[in-house]
Amino acid sequence: MIDFTLVAKQEFERNLTTSIEYQNSDVIHSMDIVRNMSLIAFTRFAKSSSLYFSLSHALSASIIGLQVLNAMRCRYGVVRPAQMLNLMASVLFCNIGIIRGVLDGDDGDRQRVSDDKNTIVDNKFTDSILWIHKSIRSKMFIKNISFLDTNVNLEIVSRAIEYSDFSTNESTSEGELGEIDKYARAIQIITLMSDQNYDRRLVEFYLSLNEAGLVDETIFSSLQDFRDRWVQYFWERLFPVVGEEILLLRETNEGRNIVSQMYSQL
Image 1: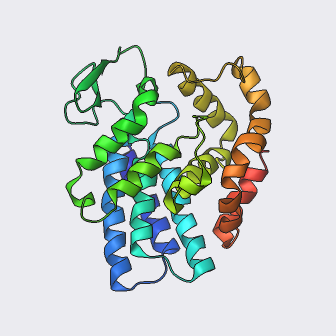
Image 2: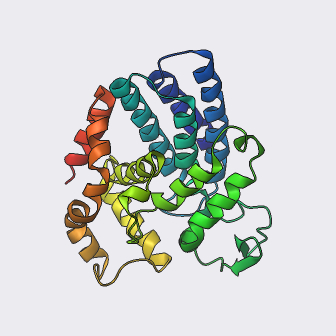
């Protein structure tokens, strides 16, 4: 039987060691923390029943996160350990709250949606039904990982978790956004748009959104309409958010491959 968590861990490790090339003691220590974070995330996502927020998605997003770090190193000469840890924590944990049973206090069909409130989730639904509560549950999750408190800035990561969900049309002033916020959201968008199975992933994205009742029916009337109009939506609504990060990725060969794959599907 294939251990998909182990496969994800090995693929992530391969990308981690090739994208983070400089080996001073601070970076080596940070890489060890990132490894621990990835194992926690992949173990949880292996149990996800969401069509879109799967172990495969978590791995793809984390690899693009590593490539963003590599591109930052190439452009700016250095990536600070705090940047690495805050970004990778944001990428690995921003969607983890969608998984049933991931929080202490989740019990059967009762899932925590705040410190003092639960919601009932019928077993006929996949984990995508929790999408509307995903961000708050993800922020609750990271607060319960003891080693994160001393190694990442939980306030920065929590803000990035909120902003990473590009399904929302809520606007945030550019002046209110930090570096990690912008990277976290861009990585989620690029993960979808550059997927080698883009057509299938786009359908899974829609079906997961629809299950959660989050499809904007003033824009998309059906799955077919969503597929027909998504590219236009990307250029009008999402490209302005990811333009800087796309240029950044072009600093490296691996990043250029990601960008080329994305553009080939537009």
